Image (tube, rainbow, N blue to C red; front, side, top):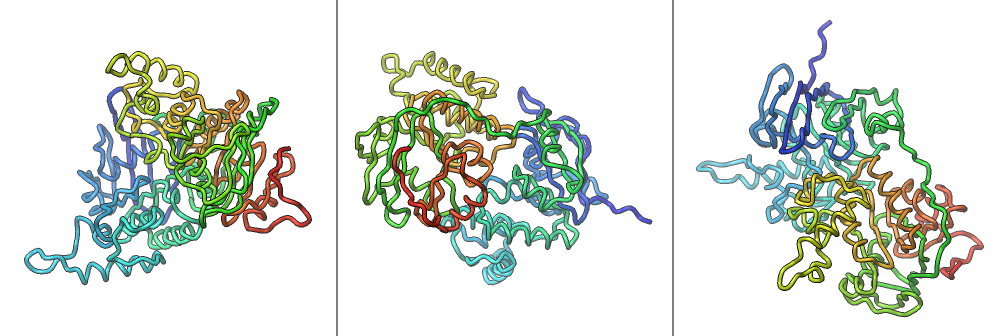
Length: 509
C-alpha cells in the first residue's frame, strides 16, 4: 500500500537573528486534509517558522518540501505560486484599494496590452466572497470595512489558488462568533479537498475543536507532536512552558479601601445607557458581555475618548469632568487599550521610549530629555513586571505579545494612577504569559489600585475579578460577587435575561 505523501514537510530549519537563534533544527509535517496546530508561547518561534515557509524569511539551514518536491520561496507571491498561502495575524492589506484588488494583488487578470480585466476580477472575487458568506462586494474599498471583515478579505486570498497548504495565524482574533463559524466551515471545505492546514492559535477551545494533531515549539526548538484527540490542555501547556501551570485563581487576600471611582446613571448615545457602578481601592471589577455590549465604550468615556450624554463620574467622592485623555491622566485614570499594537505602543520605537512617552516632558535636563532618568524608569518597571528584553534599545515591535502588554501596563503604572482600566488584557497572548498578566493584575490590586478589567474570555474574567458586571446591549444586567457567580448565571445575564425578584443596584457594599 502506497504511503500518503505529506502536503508539506520542513526539515532541520534554522533561522538566526542578531543575538538570538529563533529556530534551531525545527522539523514539521502536514498531511493532506489535516488541520495541524502549531503552538508555543509568544517568542517560541511559531511565526518565524511560518514566515520562512511563506517566503518572508529565508532559512539559514534546512529544507522545505511541497509534496515530493524540494522548494525555496523568495517572497510571498512565489510561495503562493508553489501552493503555500499565508493568512497573517497582522493584516497586510492595501486599504485604499478594493477588496478584489487586494484578493488578487500581484496577479490581476488582464486583457490585451496589459489592461486589467475588471469584469473578470470582480466576478472571480464575488464568487469567493459568496463562499465566505460575507455581505460586502468585490468593489468595496477595504478601508471602509470593519477589522473583522478585513480579516475575511485576508482569508479570501487563500481561496484564489490551488493551495497545497494554508497557514492560519491567529485567524479568529478579530472575528465575531458568526464569522468564526464561517471560517471553520471554510477550513472544513479546504480539508475535504485535501489541503493541509497549519493552524496557529492560543485559544485552546479552537485547537480541540478544529485540529487533528498538535506540534509544540519552545525557545525555537521542536518539543513534539500529539494527537489532539488523545491529549489534554494540561499536557499541551506543560510542553509549551516546560512546567505545570497553576490555573487556580491567584487570590491575594487584602482589605478593600474606600471607593476610588463611582459612575452614576452614565449614558453615551446609543453605546450604553443609565450605567452605574463603583470600584474600591484594592478591587478588581470585571466587565463581561458580548461584542457591542458597551464595555469598551464605558472605558473610553472614563479615559476622555468619548463624552457622556448624561450622568456623572466621581473620583474619591468628587465629581469630575473628563473632556480628554490628558484630563483623565491628570486625574489619575489610565487605560490599557484593547489593541495594544495600534493604540498602546509605537512599534518602531524602543522599549524605553514607549515606557516614558506619557511623561517625557517631565524628564528633561535643560532643553534635552534626560537619558539617565528615562533608563532608570524603564529599568525599574522592567524588573518589577519581569519584562523580558535584551535591553531598552530593543524595538518594542520585536517583543512577544506578553512583553508588549507589560510595556503598556508599565507605561501607565509609572504615572502612579488611582484607577487602572485594562481592556482585553491577554488578547493574542500565550497561556504562560496569560498566567503572568493575571497574577500581576491581582498583585496590583493588593497594593491598592482600583482596577477595571474588560474581557471577552469567561475563564479570565472569573479568574481575576472580585466582582463581575454583566452587560447586554448597553445595559448592566447584573453585578455578581466572586462568591455567587457561576458560568450559567453569567451566560444568562449577558444574554439579556434579568434576574427575577432581584433589585439591581450599584450602591456601595
